[in-house]
Length: 100
Image 1 (cartoon, rainbow, N blue to C red):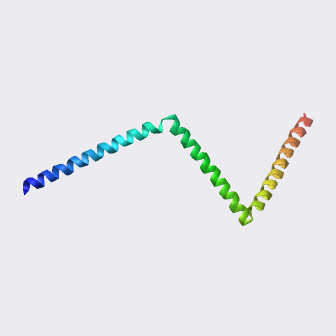
Image 2 (spheres, rainbow, N blue to C red):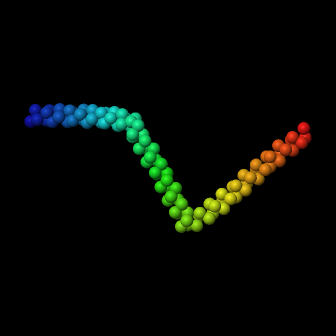
Image 3 (tube, helix red, strand yellow):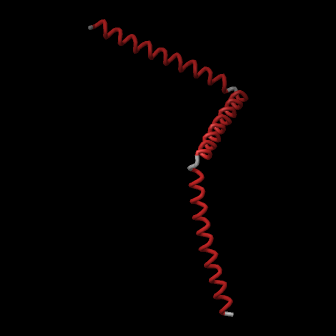
C-alpha cells in the first residue's frame, strides 16, 4: 500500500512540474507573439474600434437624454470665452507696444 502512495505522490509532483513548465513556455510564446508586427497592428485596430464605439454610444445616449444640446451650448460658450481671452491678450500686447 505504501508503494502505491509513494508512486501517487511522485506522479503528482511530476504533474506539478510539468504544469509549471507549460505555463512558463506559454508565457514565453505569448510575449514573442505580442512583439510581432501583425499582432501590434491588430491591437491598434481593436483600440481604435473600441474608441469609436464608445464615442458613438455616448453620442446616442446624449441624443436620447438631450445632452447633445447642452454639449453644443458648452462648446459655443467655450469658444466665446477663448475668443475673449485671445482678444484681451492681443489688446494687452498692443497697449504695451503703444507705451514703448
